[in-house]
Image 1: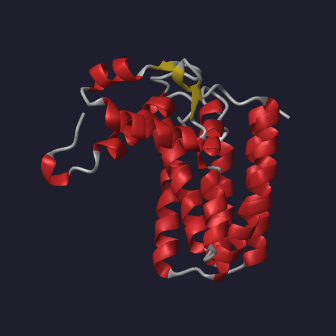
Image 2: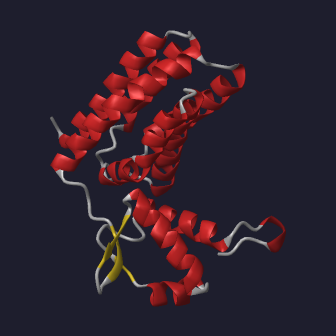
Length: 221
């Protein structure tokens, strides 16, 4: 559970990653109570790093804290929240894609291509296999985060990062037959191709179509 001493990161960081993994795999269901004492015994760590990890997860929106009741996994998103998240992403991500295309580097393109390849490998079975779903959401996360980092505007990158937990909730909400990963995979390729060509306008339009399509697939519209 805890990393070997030679390679150990802070325990709070390890607990953050572990809990995130458990949320996304469904090991801890949406709305489930997160009792710190019980978690401390289960994971064999002290309560202090757990509190820190849960506080960070609360900031992302993946965890909620209720007065006198403690923490719980955030509930599934409502249709209204999904729609509003799309609207927020459409204000930010097309611009990030356009700027990333204009600032592309060979190293960035190699990293982005790796995420696209991983996404394609997960696409066929993301809806039915936990392992493939894990690869799906992690590669999707890396893809979008890499573009945000490459855009060269730290304030836009921070704005996107602030949505990170809600986008994870969106991915979790899309689990069990609704990821649309097989349709999203070619959309990632289209975005990559536009960025690799240095075509900012095409990259922005491809990102806009991807964010809109992902939302429509989830809502069944």
